[in-house]
Image: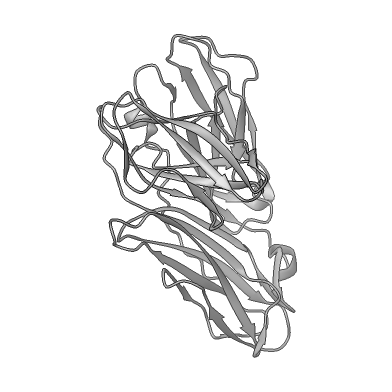
Length: 341
C-alpha cells in the first residue's frame, strides 16, 4: 500500500511558546507515539498541566477530534501553582499509516486554554479491505475517511492531505472525481485493479486576497464505472491572515460564551453578546460569518480599541441554531466559533 507521511501544523500548539504569566500551561502540546502496531492496542501519554494563575483552575470539559481518543483529566479544581496530569489515550483500531488527533481543553468559563496534539504511524493488522476500510463510497469501493478537515490555511498557502480508497471486487473500476470549489485540487487514480488500494491526494490553496476571510466546505464526488457513487468525501478549510503574536497583541474574549435567540417581534429573532478586547492593540473584527438568512450589526474590519468592547447583535427570521464564526487579528484565536441557539 502506498502511504504518504505529511506534516500538520497544529492550531494551538504554539501556546507553550507564547503563554502569558498566569495562564495554565502544559509541559508539552504535542506527542508523537512514533511507529505503533494496530494489534498492540491502546497507547497513552500524560501531559502535565500547571496552574500558573492565582486562583483555582477547573477543567470543565475536553473535546476530542475522534472517538478513537479518550482523556483522563482531574475533575477537581487544580490549586494555584499545582500541577496535574492529563492523560490522552489513542486506540489504533482501524487506523492505517500516519494519524493526527487533537484534544481541546476548556476551563470553567468554557474557554479553550490548550489544544493537545497526538500523532502516530500505525502498522495495520493484515485484514480484508472491508475490515480495514470502514466507509463505503459505492459497491465494492471503500475509503478510510469520508470527512477531511484541513483547519486554518493562511492567505496564499497550501495544505495537502490524503485518503485511501480500495477496490474489493474481482473486476477493475474506472473512476472520475469532481469537487465544488476552485480552492480544492483532487488527484485521484482513474482506474483501480481488483483488490488494489490507492491514494487520493487533496490539496487546498487558500486565496491570496488579503481581504478574504471565509470557511470553505467541499463535496468530492465520484463516478464509478460511469455511475455516481452513493457517498462523497467532505472537506473543509478556513482561509485567514497570519497575525504575529506579540506581548501587545489584541486579545479576544466574548460574553456570554453562546448566543440565545429571543423573539423581537412576530417576524424576527435577536441574540446578542459582548466582544471584549483585553489586549494592548486594536482588535480588528475582519468578518462575522453567518448563514445567508442571518444578519449582524457589525461590518467587516470593525475595530475594538484596547480595553474596550463592542456589542454584537444577530438577527434572524427564525430561531434555527447555527455556528457563528468571528474572524479577528487575535493571534491565539484568529477564528472563534460561537453557538447561536
